[in-house]
Length: 77
Image 1 (cartoon, rainbow, N blue to C red):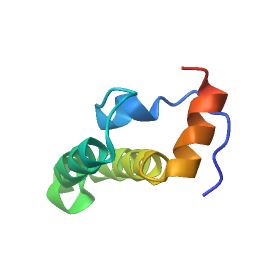
Image 2 (image 1 turned 90 degrees about the vertical axis):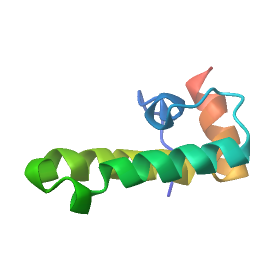
Image 3 (image 1 turned 180 degrees about the horizontal axis):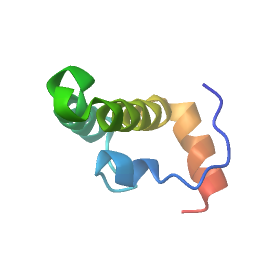
Image 4 (image 1 turned 45 degrees about the horizontal axis):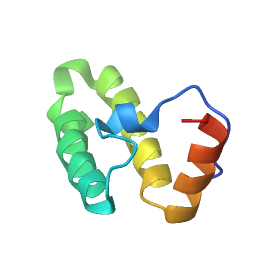
């Protein structure tokens, strides 16, 4: 996934601080992705699918050292 200049705050999406460790990012992703998984939110499936996609996108960037570094550079934390 290409990191594009975005207004999304991936740290906020996962509920972690910008100085979070890889382990903290992994744990936050596991917790929030389970909470928002569309199969667990059948009554609000569309919202859950959108949120789950956003969570997955944030994790994809923040869990990769190079993508995270690039994201931090372009987001001017």
